[in-house]
Length: 216
Image (cartoon, rainbow, N blue to C red; front, side, top):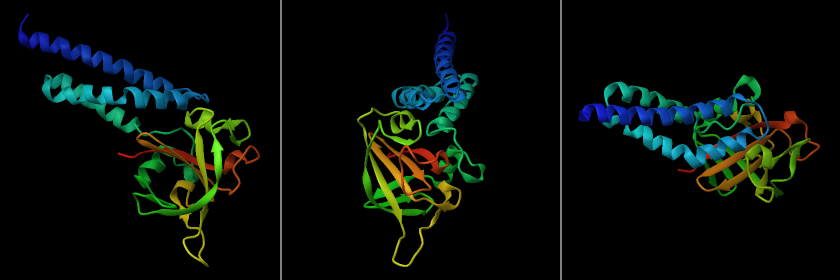
């Protein structure tokens, strides 16, 4: 067996492994069940780096295999921060809205986004993963966190006295009234609501969307 043949066979084995993982990711994204997001986040956080490393090998592989792995790397990058399949006002998906605002940085009481939007907040209360944010839906189910996880609920307030709460692109160009923030290793999970009250009596339409931001 020549060195080129051995290298090609090794490359195909790596490609097959990466394709298997991508197929599993696409399957999880295709089904609509309440536990899908928890499974996706586990898959992303636990195996995403390994897939990325496999894709990075492309530069040392034969050109035909490298091209296919490059496509896999693009697919993983495009899905890496996809937090859900719900839609915000205006028909934008959560993922599209996430791409529009870019990054999120927590600075004191402010939520600062990469597109220069800023939401000023103040504490409301601490909610737990087991708590419902609307009838029949808990933070645990939506964010994929344990029942005892602590989520910060914050009221979105005007930036100054006599000013109105600014509109947010994450709420379809309308003001967000409350935010749920969960900080964990390497990520910030964010939920925005159109109403100040967040609980089992909140209507489903109160939720603007759910996003997962990288802190890297």
